[in-house]
Length: 282
Image (cartoon, rainbow, N blue to C red; front, top):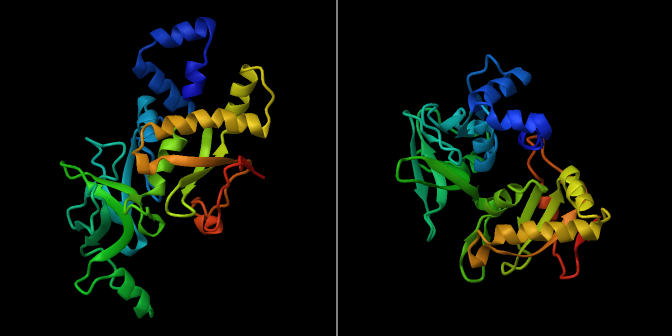
């Protein structure tokens, strides 16, 4: 939508620039068949803040919530009257949520308790004891923090956290969100082969990448794709603390394999190590 609007030329560009934003929003909603839809609810995976706010600019308000099947399934949700795009919302009235085992930045495991929390897994006592404390708190395995107004934010998964040799916690999902903010990057996988250097594997948005490279008068080759994306990696690094910066990256020329819920199968890449001369993985 953004590319279609900003890419207008001539009289269409002029009309788009002077048309009231409310008019443009109505046109977009109508063209997508969303005339009668009041809200779009997002769940299942964290929605990047830049995506949520971008949709909102064009009249597509997205309310993000959070929960698990073990919580039947809701724990938090953004109030429709005052949503925060990067947040998974506020705790529903029937629940209590605590952040446990916090690190130096206030991130810790999200735990929840309430009447909607499961009693346990059917005929699986071992799994139940891993997920529930003796007093009924659900250990979600998600890492997050509260802001001063009681909005909850997710920064990653406990099982994916990278603990550097300096004792710092790096959450791959946080860095991946910054990378995929770029219109040139479709997907990203952040990892560390040695708990020292942060590395990334990137699947480009090929249509946009091709357009940029051809505009530069160059051939669309794997090497030129890597060189173009290097600027995006450097831009993301400028927003990261030193211990989170990406030391090396490579380009993947096909989509990542995913689960049925469209999450990257990280376990397939657990032994991946990029050498300094690796730029493209075929």
